[in-house]
Length: 219
Length: 219
Image 1 (cartoon, rainbow over the protein chains, first blue to last red):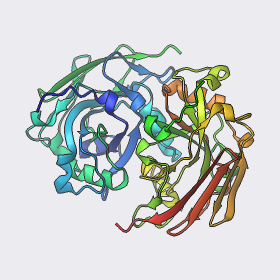
Image 2 (cartoon, each protein chain N blue to C red; image 1 turned 30 degrees about the vertical axis):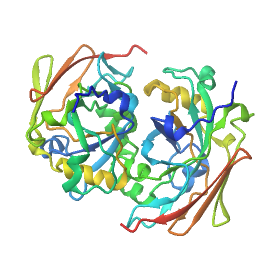
Image 3 (cartoon, helix red, strand yellow; image 1 turned 180 degrees about the horizontal axis):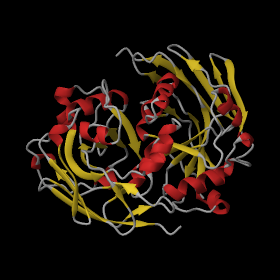
Image 4 (cartoon, rainbow over the protein chains, first blue to last red; image 1 turned 135 degrees about the vertical axis):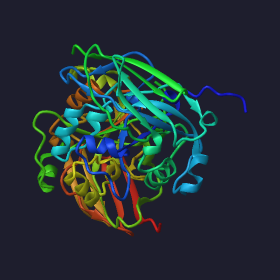
């Protein structure tokens, strides 16, 4: 097969993310781990960036980083069985699920949607596309993130509570998956605040590396 | 200008909705009316249907209908001033923001995202596109919805708490708006449950009419 350069930011029409998919991360935020089903939320495609700066909306002062494995859908489907789920995957991206943590906590207290805290512009930095064939075992990938050179997150996808086939199967029961859709699979522990002037670097094994400076908007 | 047939379901890459934008609707659900800013959430584009049935996911038994005016973006923008906001609008659609109300209440109690309750497949039925020129006053449009011939919702866009220019301006501060984006502007009072076998009909003045039967999935 000829190598394709997939531009996820162009083909993607849906981003669906799971919350609390790593035990240690749920614990560090004092959140119960989901027992039965994954907890899903959306990010708008307008939040994707592939270069440039992560922009903190004016006045929000701080964001939390969340380094994640992103799964890119190639073959559409609905009611996908877990044993067939990986057939629907065409590749991966390394993702930062940037989150306005204090905004999110306020929204949660009132039972409000998370959308503003999770979906603001530049809240979804992604790496170049990684073809499926480049990954031997999707459940043994190292996720690492540093802020200003100091390691903050250092996890492995083997610690996912809901593994990729189960995530895709569950999500596809309610949301039909299309070519280009991006599924964010959760973040390990070590989330912390970043502010204006900080620099985030992250890696997925030796498959992808990203670097994004953080600024706060002046207006 | 030559008349274009805009297929919102094809060009749309983002659906952003506002909750509680009609006082009487907030009251009927026992919810406080937002004071300062609109309350925003997202629906995935996978939820859009233009024909066929509204499908209740298996086991959920009932959905609530919410008839809304949808605003379709033509000219992209960010940090849009209210006085310029209508320049970014290319037209409208009539929308049903179908909602799994009991799922939503459970999610709210736990501070969870609304995404599953608001974004499942077929939860965003829309009418044909209405060009901007067909609407004299976007803040004087009648929104009507009937279930099995009985009128349930009968409101007017003049009762919006946050008017369209202010909504677009606020949303564009955090989410850059692109061509084809769909903004749902809230629902008047009268939301009620629909179950397998019910038929929903709705109209936006004499500009659009839609009809969707409701079924519950067998699996």
